[in-house]
Amino acid sequence: MEYAGFGGLIVLALNIWAIISIFGSNVSTGSKVLWTLLVIVLPVIGFIIWLIAGPRGNTATV
Image (cartoon, rainbow, N blue to C red; front, side):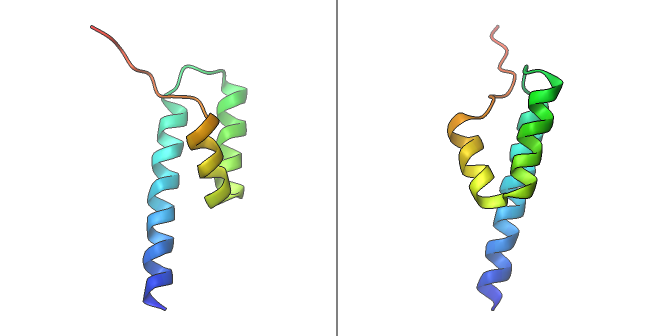
């Protein structure tokens, strides 16, 4: 039972990281909302889809 709690904590942390990355990306507001809803509604599947095809964070080059 404790493993399920720890696994849930890992999924929560990954989803929070994904949402922060979504809001830091350069895509439109509508896309940010759709990606965020996908990650919230389908936590594991949404995270995997975001990881493969989602918007990337803002990477500045100096």
